[in-house]
Image (cartoon, rainbow, N blue to C red; front, side, top):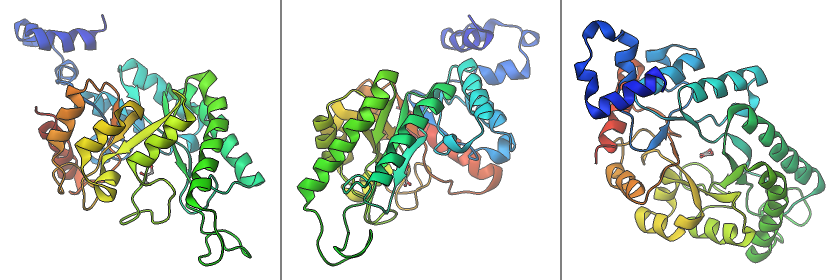
Length: 317
Ligand SMILES: O=C(O)C(=O)CO
């Protein structure tokens, strides 16, 4: 058993109290911090003031606060060497790697109305994601399947007016494209998680908005490697009714993200009762990652401490 693991289990059984103070270094004491019940995943920059600029130090700091996962949307643009270093660090700390973004288009109908060049781009991005996932031991990657068809018959994408594909054909094209992506990820065991996004605060025009829509698409693609990323922040804005919608789409959800509304900051900065939502996920036996894809309502060290305390409160059930 690793010393860190020993200390974690010792805390649970109460044996840490029996160790003499001299037997514990300051680092060990930090290591005995209780881990969260769910796999909340901070990202680079969230602890810049408390842990310094180095991402490896930030990951270690997060582990010492009891976080058991990490997320990095921008992982593919990091140098391969750094990706590997991050993967090894997470591994040595027993932390899960959460999502990075494999493919996201917010304003082009690349899935609903595919063209040769955009299709090649999507398939290449998914192939690249397999390589990145291996370096960082990631099981999931995010896919945002483009915008709705706003195409004018006589011009390029994103012009209103004129003809456009009816919704059913757009959906069928998305399903076809995802099946092609699945052929790449399935043999590698990498799960693409599709993220419905809200139109009203952040991403007007994206094709995928609702959890029922994502559910129907995942059922049609019918692969263990094409699932839903249920972002609680986006879904609070688009549809509310969080717990019933999570239950209804549960069998297709593979990943969660958080953020309070309005403002997309840490829990308790807005209107969502995160303690109840997290308790619900825990009761359902969710063992995956809950990505903290949001900002901080406070500034500097105090803001970061407030963020940690918000998760401690939300996790206290
Ligand atoms: O850009 C966003 O808002 C997303 O959640 C994409 O990952």
